[in-house]
Length: 143
Length: 143
DNA sequence: ATACTTTATGCAACAATGATGCAAATATAA
DNA sequence: TTATATTTGCATCATTGTTGCATAAAGTAT
Image (cartoon, rainbow over all chains, first blue to last red; front, top):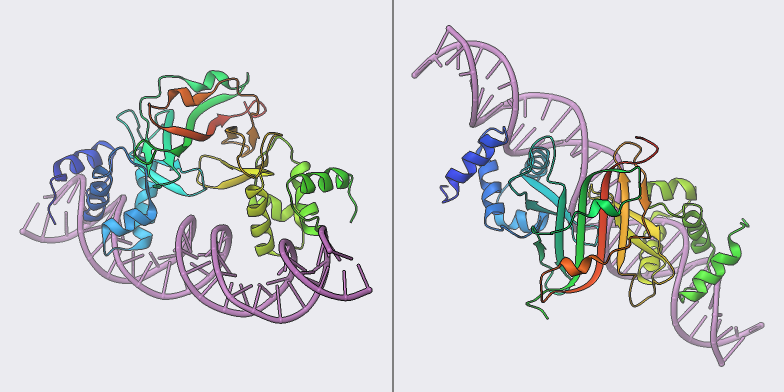
């Protein structure tokens, strides 16, 4: 099961201190083919074909721990997963993740280029480590 | 099972077009005794004592539909619920919900007074209906 | 390449949560 | 108070999150 992402896969796994296994490469390929989108567990399972549910669950967790992916919310309490930007690592995720969820088509898009730092709006005394911003509404294509 | 919240309860349920049942009043009391906090399903169940799981689940949903509560994320894909401000109704929730989740004590606090409208940062063409902002880190008391 | 150590996988089993159908109970309106 | 519509509580099932453990595979040293 060779893929065009193989080199990138190996590199990414190595960079984040994870062993290169067949399953991880496949999962990473799924994410790479959805760059800029936050995808649901369901979408991942469909893309993977035959696979073990628990392994997926654990691999998602290790990807998150190592800073390869991050969790995004679609505004409906359902988790989605998306590739992290360059600056995420094992010790800390990039501090601001912004996403747009379209209530019509159901797509969740990453808005990587949020220009503002939001933490300045938090009351004094709070130490902000991470920020999740989720907009929902209607996307360009559906409007 | 009388409570000091009874009057407020009745009023709120009426305002949002819901029948006044014992269960709804109890649930509303739980929320009223946690004003400013976003609470988990678990916390609610504990506060309620003996109750039916499905009824709770459905009541939470109707509260959300009618704009009494809103869902908040704690940054870990676990849903939390919190009382809405005045401006929420059946057709639309108040458009910006900001919360702070403390990774140490686990509390999720509502930050109702966010001074900024964030939707201006969304790329052209997107129609924003709702915004969820979740900060996580360490709160004042834990720091 | 081989043997060894560590990590990952796949399976069983279970817990927690989300969801639906339906009869009995309750709230509201007439 | 009676009639109507909604809500509750229960049974039941689906989906998702979690752990333990034996086997398999990846990395490492010989």
